Amino acid sequence: MYSRRSSSRPQGQITRGKTARNRLRRVDNFMLMYAADLVKMKSAAGECSFYVDLGYGAEPFTTLESAERLHGLNPQLPVLGVEIDPERVERAQPYADELVQFRLGGFNLPLEPGESVRLLRAYNVLRQYEEDQVQESILQMGEALIPGGLIL
Image (cartoon, rainbow, N blue to C red):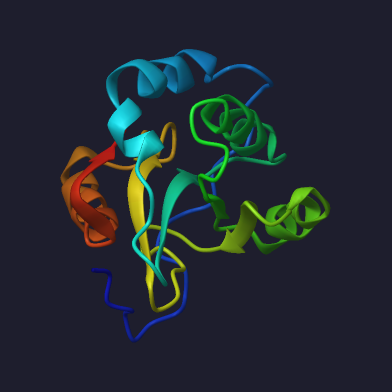
């Protein structure tokens, strides 16, 4: 289970944020085909296990599109869009609902007690880092994964 770090400052760097609509649909389709068990699983009582879209960009399109596709397989799947830029998070808030949330955060995911991650998509956020910085970021994200969870 995820243990909250003492630092609440988001870890990472702001990206260009240029993700276009439908750009990551193939990744969503991959998850539906090859990670269907993770998408369909139910969270334990009193807990919440998210699909996380880390670094969704200037607009929340990728998070919302993933939610729509993944909800076709599991209509109760909790979805969390995470961005390191506070303005991007603020712009996404009108799109939030009971199953889709947007929070300020980075590689140290902004999870509350009783929350974990089953699937995490971190496309494009790692490409701006030097190769020797990537492993630490992946390990940090992995701390929030449930056993058998997946980072893409």
